[in-house]
Length: 346
Image (cartoon, rainbow, N blue to C red; front, side, top):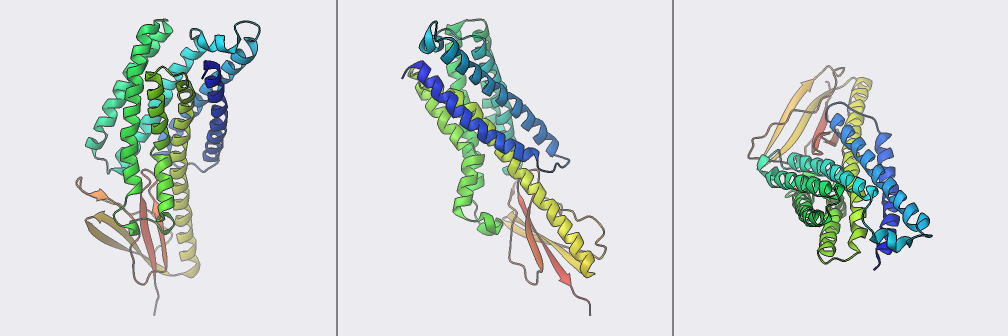
């Protein structure tokens, strides 16, 4: 495959992926914002949006210069086979910042889903640090036009980047896909199809596969590796915004349920016994609260576990309930099953 064809395929794939990313991003932008961890999601999403659009603009510039302006001179093949210009240098530094932000988000996700165990994220953090240093050194060589050193350093950074993503994919995929008790999940999320789709998208499995192919083609000096290399940034962007959108949907669902509880209680004049079923392997605890004053805001019960417990929250059969729902913690995407049982008077 010629270099010009590899770049052309990559540019068209990027256009498709950019459309998918923008759709998800503007959908997230239209959703209501909350306080707390939403600030972290907002900053991360806007940084990814800036870096992704810079990457898309660079691809557009390459398309114009490589397949239009170069027709009367060296032609597309000569343009893409020549030494890298400022556009390629910009893309490399932009790629460094983009994967740093996206990998940090996914490492944070691993930390939350694995019950904040620090030892779980030790290896991903070390690999991410090594990848960042190698990529920065390699891009500096590129800016100084030291191409031999750049090729050697960038090969090491690609290997480290692949290792980081594979480790993150395994940790996230295992936590999202396998659950010892399906009753810990909401009813609509118990199907194997839903759990598999969520694990594939949020764990970055597609990114890992593309990185493995990219590294293999790069080591064997095959030009097709540019097709994967130029498409990977948009895959990172889509994965990060998919995570943020799903957590935002969870926040919206929690707020709607709080409003429903308050309006229903006031309308009926009934008091409710509030029960939060917390499934903490290997034990299950149930805490009841008697609230007659429904004018108070409804709050998600505080959940405490020891550092050795694997936190799982979800549904469990509960007799005599009237209203029950599985809500999602906005910070870590873990569901809490809360039940409202009406205490009839007389």
